[in-house]
Image (cartoon, rainbow, N blue to C red; front, side, top):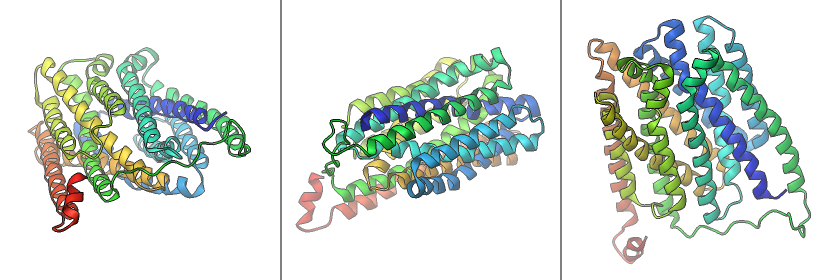
Length: 409
């Protein structure tokens, strides 16, 4: 088995992870609404608590994988998720379900940064573009299909399948992980003259490192705001379904359009690298994100919401892709950088729902207050991004002999 073939196994683990986590974390809000009468504000608070944990746990998990080994981190993550979901399948109290969700989140934090690092290690610049592209298409494609069909699955097998389906998937992941670990050991110990030996060390990326680091900072700033919007939408989808009188199955169909728009964007960005280190694409994506988010939750016509979801998915796709690609492209500690990338997502997972919940608390008679509050937060993110870009441009364009070189960058 070659090093590249081994990575195909990591992509299988990634796809299974996307399937399991999408079923649980996207449909848990339907479960909480039905079993415990949660409304939009309650689901937003639950989502905010989950994001708060994810922020710090993902940062730690990235460091854990870098220092103690990627396979150990994955094994810990899959085990925690499988065990917590198995318990959740039969527990009935609210406190227990919240504990299950938080434990499952903790386990998930050990998986995504590690998988990102595994597929990115020992890659040339061109290879990294390919690996990150495949990674994004795999998880986004599986996530979109799972959300699209998840409502029908839960309707067919019962709401408790929300727990045992992903728990079973995580057990399968553990079995595959043990097999891949054995294969990885064989690959590492192959003789240097073997036709199956590892690829040589990658060439250095010729892009200006100062510019690359600035774009990494911009991506880490933008990605939390993108997930402010994502988690706010996901948490209030039950309310959106109620507005149009949709069943969980139809809600899954209608509200998954942005996921497929994001997938299409990932595919384009994978095949075309002209967006690398280009500020204007960043701004266009952020504007699409803001407009798509507000329109999805404020429009009253289904066709308008469909168009809004497409714009939202496109903006989200470029912002997320940028954060992950720049995280893997800058620096050698890919596990830690993957942890920072996921921790930035956690900030958004916490911030958006928290702002939305506070708005609904102070303005309970205005159901759109949460949407306007989150939209305002996204606009603040856009202004922060513009300010960072302005300072960065000034730093990269000093007066003197280096100014001509900086323009070429």
